[in-house]
Length: 328
Image (cartoon, rainbow, N blue to C red; front, side):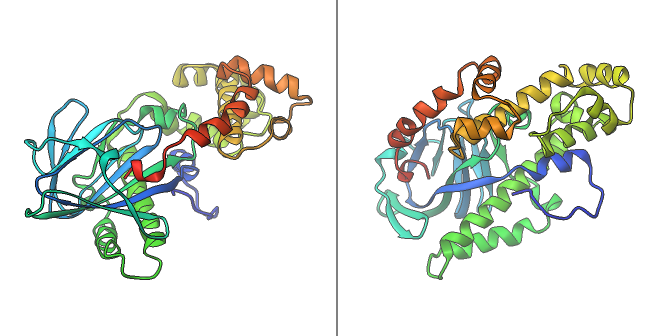
């Protein structure tokens, strides 16, 4: 999503960090809702994205306040918090699971609901999975809800992308599903980038990533988490002595370099086990462990459960996951 292949131009450490952040689009749905209407979206382990294509609607936020969304607006809930969309704050939202969804093209479902004679609102929604572990510092710092307000001012291409999404929502062109998934990924990426640049505060992990020296070290660690990073090697990246680097890192990041590296490596290992379905032995070798047992002990110490736990529950979790129609 925020990835590119160029290595010829020097980039800010935070940019290096964001290069690896990607979104895998799933559960794409077009909703054609006739007034009066309302939908409640339950909390999910996936990020939830909404784009208003035609007419406006209202969004009920986590604090039960209603916010107006106009055509062309987009919202992203990074941790999939419960929320509601409705034709008006007076409408009674019903569970989205009550809707009937029909496949209309590759990767996209469609539903029509609401009243019978009112104006029609067209929405595009998606359930998205970040390629980062849920405990990644960037994801932990994200707010529960991101709204597109003045994004077009900072991202001049966004209005054109939203216009393209509106056109593709007609679903009368070859490849509409693929086009919508890519456009939604770019819009979501713009929301995240705009938040990082302007709205994520001046402390915590992002502040550490912005620090010229420490940011360079964090970028190196995230770029190559499989490397056996030593404090000396990380100090070299910062061009500092071992003791000066270790003290500076602990003061800025809030934990020792060794602890940070260990946590990142095990979060990556968890992703490889759950997302990529790699065998424990393969993950252990990738991280440089001589034995599966040594890796399992280190994994359990940091994650809180052995890697075998995630392998054993993976099949059960996959089989119990509801179909895409429950998450527009």
